[in-house]
Length: 595
Image 1 (spheres, helix red, strand yellow):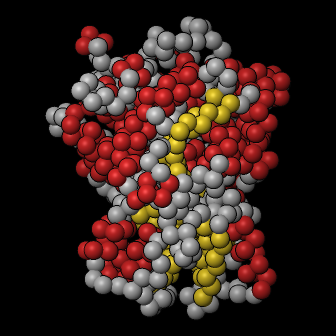
Image 2 (cartoon, rainbow, N blue to C red; image 1 turned 180 degrees about the vertical axis):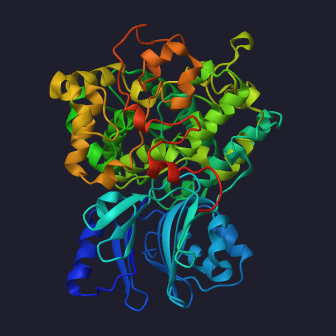
Image 3 (cartoon, helix red, strand yellow; image 1 turned 90 degrees about the vertical axis):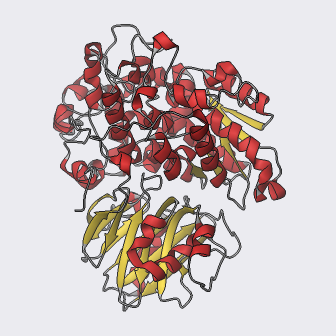
């Protein structure tokens, strides 16, 4: 990952302003420690700053990047997996580098703003057309890479990979919505990503074909083996990461990367000593014959890192912080080994209804609607965690399950096939398990292939969450919690754990705009608020941990526990259509159309 900062419409080109831009960009340097670049054009009224993490063409791919005549300039955070195919389909251009991202400038020269919808990858970028002094900004369809939009005191428009670069110089800032483009010509945002599956009202009916699903996933993994630097796979031992590792290990020998870095895949796992994930990950690694690296941490290690984790992830969401902390600690160890890119398993649970609360889905229609709600909110949760926890140490995370083509296949399948059916021996994510259940040439051991879903924050060791709650209980008094609505009227925390995270967040980000970028609402085992209605017992057992799925998780909490980790009061809960009643987030999460 890289870090980008753009200031458009500025009228200040003094040395002091340039120094300020560099200072703000420096706040993003953890994302791109390899090189810094700054483009300034007074006539166009723009500053484009870039902090580079070199993955493709490390020697000459410094940014910003240009088209052949250098009258189109772009700063990009991300990877464009179809850059070679795009080059072949375009007219001939003069390329200055071998960077996969340079193709954006040339494609824009050919087709204008339509270029955004032709990209296959994860990306956030700002492009300036010096020919007419216009600009666009865009973010990938799901929001794998982060982007924020702000308005400065001087009337300029700001864009940045993280809000820490905006919080002191913008009167207001917000999350740039995924699948959107901001155009200076039209003066606002419009959605460019509108796949057939995006509407909750249309229930798909394509028959399930295990071979088709398996092939689509293998292609998604293969795309993401494009690299010029050492890489590996984050392996928890659960279904999703194990499948990524299994497919990657099979395909690695066919890639150019294998010729440089070797054909043995590196895998990485983290957990408390003796945790479920460490045991399962080692078994998978042994089976796949990977070069496995196991990292352990203590509860105290995690607690000591909480403030840094909140600063880097820029959230006070309970589930995100619980899961981000082990990932943050592991990433530091991985980077110390010289690795710069990893594949990870985010997105599968949202696509296939893999969270344990999906066991209670009352119908295929409700299941499908919930999967769409979850996918649309990924950029606020798992995508944010995977990107910012790794980028904190200059590591890039790629997510094959969120491949555009794979999602088109997976989301077109009749959702009846995704339903948990105990009478037929079908557990969560059965269709993905069945697709890779090939006894003649097995990808994974059978018991790993059919291991119960374990949320990352649980799988690293159950005492991790228990330790967090105990620590928060010592930091937050009963009186503090009782008066929380007066201290934090927006997204009021109603547990001591949530209150503790909120206190730490406000130390780093005291601005009103900052606190409004974080979603709220009740949750059970990572559900949206709408899904809580699936089981009446859940209303009194609200906790985002998978162990809160009473009657489903093998190590569930006792039937009666203190409600924990709901992150806001009812005034900011997710509404029945899956979108937040927070006005800012509701605007971002509009399901269709141009605005």
